[in-house]
Image (cartoon, rainbow, N blue to C red; front, side, top):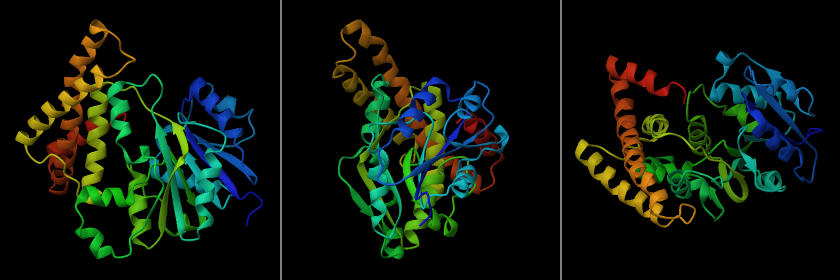
Length: 325
């Protein structure tokens, strides 16, 4: 056991005032043992680095071009002194002062190498984003233990059931540092958490979902950004787990119509958007978001397959759509 049995690692880049608030909430965590905060800043130009230099954290700076979702987190974990390392992001706000304790308690079981908690949409979140997040596995209310006793049986499961069995999200998570030496994150532009959790669970370890550890986190993105994000997500899920939710253009059109209808119902039932005229633009956006999200699923999985086949067109498309995600 080290002198500092728990660490929190946060990667930052131009975190702004929101991160200053969130760092205060991280420092205010009530834990039954000491903890430290380690930050790697990727070349902030908005004063984030200068602010961090005045705070009780350990700060390392890197060039922006050096950042990678997997490798930068590996480096941060290596810098940490804690036996347990909590991982979060600069725009995730702990819901209360026992966020960290709830994650740490999961590691009382020596078979547990990872834990992740609940994500709650912001109060002013886009209604479509709020609806989608409510259906994500990290929005559940029941704790669970994820493990695989028979890898062969795991690969016989439907792809979406495989995803449920290995779910993990670095927006709100923690890992055992000793296990990270055995199974580190891999160099990835997207989805380093799911890639890691699959390898960890298939190696015989456990991951715990603890809903009492919650952060407030969501993004009010444009439909174009949601298309790119969904594309990257489903390209990764197809590559990792074989997920292919929409397999034909006919199915794509059917899914777009269905999702638009669901989103219109979401708008009608959202008390935060009162009256016909305020709901009207959101009714239009129900189509743009449905097109974006379903097209992202379709092209993400298709692109992963085409890239394996060596398609130059999809290689160029992949570079374009991953830019800025």
